Amino acid sequence: MNRDALQSALSQHGSVSARTALAELEAGADCEVFSNQTASAQRLWNIWSWRHEVMLDTGVTPRPGLVEAIAGLQAAGTAPVYLATVTGTRRRFTIFLSEDLTQCVACW
Image (cartoon, rainbow, N blue to C red; front, side, top):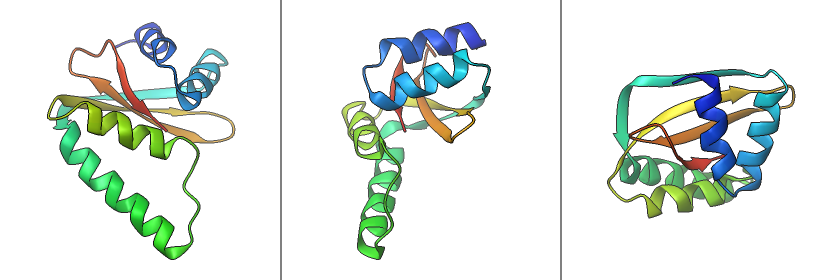
């Protein structure tokens, strides 16, 4: 997957986090797609929803977009997803991509 394809996937996703990650990417932020392995969206949903609960229980404020990303992972069901990151000037974004690498499933 190249930078343009990641930009395209982010531009199709309606979340604030995806738009912000896209803006960082367009401004020259570093990106990496981990295309050597997938995980099921359901498994990732289990992990991140549990982490979100722990954050709330311990008083940690989750980064913006986490709740929406968890919902996106849940909606993807058991579909395989790839992980990507965009490291911008203000923060690092975690992006989950569809198996064909054309759609952003979730971003936070």
